[in-house]
Amino acid sequence: MIEKGNELNMIYETLVRVSNAIVSVINVDITIVDKSLNRIAGTGRYVDNIGEKLNENCLFAYALEKGESFIIENPRYHEACTSCENRCNCKEWAQVCCPIKVDDKIEGIIGLIAFNKEQKNIIKNNKDNLLEFLNRMADLISSKVKENRKKEEIILMAEELEILLNSMDTGVVSTDDRGKIKRYNSIAKEMFNIDENDFIDVIIQDIPIVHMKKRKCQIHNKEFQYINNGKKYRAFYNVKPIVIEGEVTGYIFTFNKMKEILKVFNDLSTTHMVTTFDDIIGNSIEIEKVKEYARNISKGNSTVLIQGESGTGKELFARSIHYLSDRRDKPFIAINCTAIPENLIESELFGYEEGAFTGAKKGGKLGKFELAHKGTIFLDEIGDMPLNLQTKLLRVLQENVIERVGGSSIIPVDVRVITASNKILEEKVQDKEFREDLFYRLNVIPINLPPLRERIDDIEILSNDFLQKFNYKLNRNIKKIDKSVINLFKGYNWPGNVRELENVVEYAVNMCASDTIELTNLPRKLKESTTYTNKLENNNIIPLKDLEKAEINKALIKFGRDSDGIKQAANELGISRATMYRKIKTYGI
Image 1: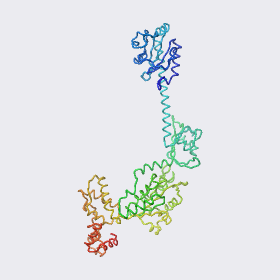
Image 2: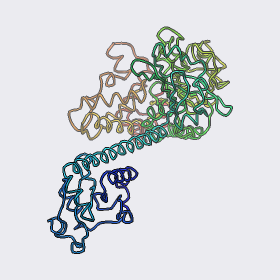
Image 3: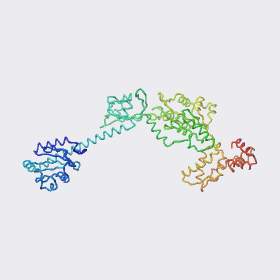
Image 4: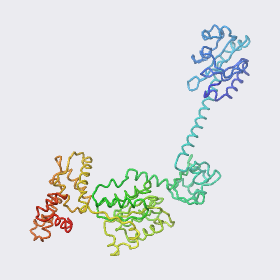
């Protein structure tokens, strides 16, 4: 059998033609072997031996090792024949060997063999011409091998390119300069149902091919709609002209499905921001009730309104609801309605078309509602949304569609809306600052987050969690927070809630020079936070109720708010424990 994959095998027809050409010029037999000593081609006596493997001690093995052209006039007695097993029975009168070299590597040998005196004389009398002729034939074979290599490389490159294009998530279409489709990948075929007889305007209507050719212009991220199997889809396309010697000879169009763009955005923006209810620190009765309630409503699609003071964790709850819902693998898009100028918030929420206003990006821009498609959008500080946008938001909630700024088409969206406010929206409704109908649309599932002063039992666990966080962040090794500091924390009003507590602990970690956070490490505002202390410094007359509140607060700071601490504080103040609990509730301490 001929060795599979040998390069000389790949040009068998050429070897046959060369062999016949040599025989027609020189009346001797020809044989061609490859570098593995397989007989690839032959004439005369060798025709029936094509495919056989020669002995490793034969003359051709010697020729492969020598790597040069030579003539043997005395077979059986030449040094190349000393190891040949067929030496005694050899019927050859003369032989010529010429190596076939490809890029300085020997790929085979051309052999001329004389089997009688007449043939030997032909070889003997034409040595120089014969060697030059054979060398040229060897060069011809070498060129054919190189040509075949290049052809194989081109075929391989074409196959690799086809595999590459078909493995992309992008549709690719090439056209001539008139827009006639020449080639396309499998994604483009799937998206548009096209063939090579179509023109590009079958996909993109009113594409200005003539104008593009004249200006040699490119198009980037242009949105368009197309129809496939009776359904409308949205996508973006890019166009790049093929310019050869200054002339446009064709175009490359690339297409991206809208859903693929949104998927990439989702992967980039939310992969590392998964939040669950376990990430919300605290085990007080107050916070556990809210977490359990939020867990129960997470699976639905109804709108949620989270109300609570600044710093109570409204966005944490919104994220936790999203990641416990069936939309967890889709986008979670958060936007703070107060962080964006009023004249820009509409375009941020709903997007805009190209040319909608001065400074609008070419190709337009997707809005947050489109980016949140199939997922959740979180609108923080919803109470500060301008009234004109409230009307537009109400339409989104009622009809599940949006309309871009400067656009005329309706875009369907499937989004769960979670809103939050640190203001009491009912009061804003009464003051005509918030639409009543929108309020009821948002307030389908209300969640009210308790302030930190109503979560006294969580203060210590939160403080220690923040201590570990800032030990790591600031490369510190503070062991604990002193009990007096925890007691002070429990007696403080915390207008900034959990966020303020976090900031105070970070400050204390920076100020602490030992392994324990002490009262001296706290911000001055916190250390001087009691009503009693402040009013004494001003020499004001203190109402009895303020004095009582201040002393109760001082006692709680000293003894703590657990049952033993409250008992000791009541004894120190000379009141019963029941009275102590009642006054704590009355004064909101």
